[in-house]
Image (cartoon, rainbow, N blue to C red):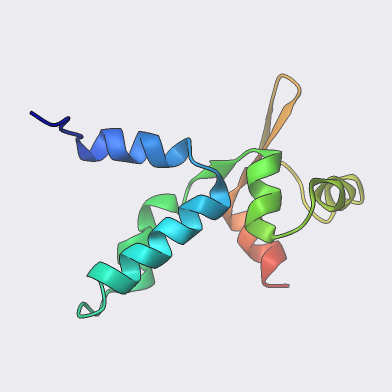
Length: 101
């Protein structure tokens, strides 16, 4: 019998997948399963509204190098929402704001 995966297991697995690969997955999902549905952005991505990203994930989201990302932070273009130890964590809202500016 095959392995059964819950929605929570799938979400955890997706979180451990590199950001760009996750984008490819959702693109494939949209093309193959959501074409006939007229879903709003909020219905598909609403669960990410309060998500937080590491520096690497944030750089991937912004489609910039980690060096450029660090310069943005150093120059104050982007501020972490919180710091955990030596790691900076960035909110979805601040990344969206920077990306759309």
